[in-house]
Amino acid sequence: MSTNNETLAIRDDMIRLGQALKLANVVEDGVDARDAIQAGDIQVNGETETRRGRQLHAGDIITIPELDLNLVIETT
Image 1 (spheres, rainbow, N blue to C red):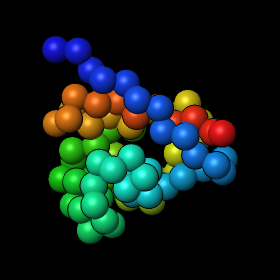
Image 2: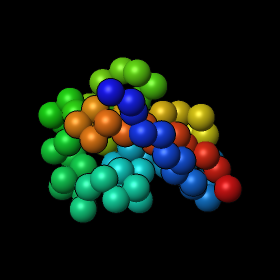
Image 3: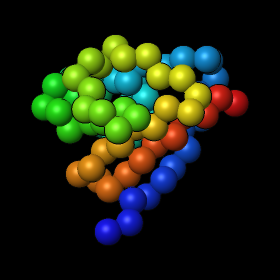
Image 4: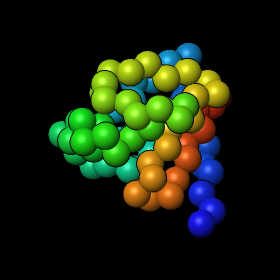
């Protein structure tokens, strides 16, 4: 099974995990983001992340195993 890699471009130096999931259209809103994160469905840099407010910077990788997807954070 191959994982799809996609780039998530952000304007600032940092984005919070919940916001990144919404920007990438992985979830519809903050409630969905919270639920997915608290359920342990999201990994950041290879580790399960349960904090919706986790700060992400360029080079960080969000992994969503259910979707077979890696999102690589990149600043524009």
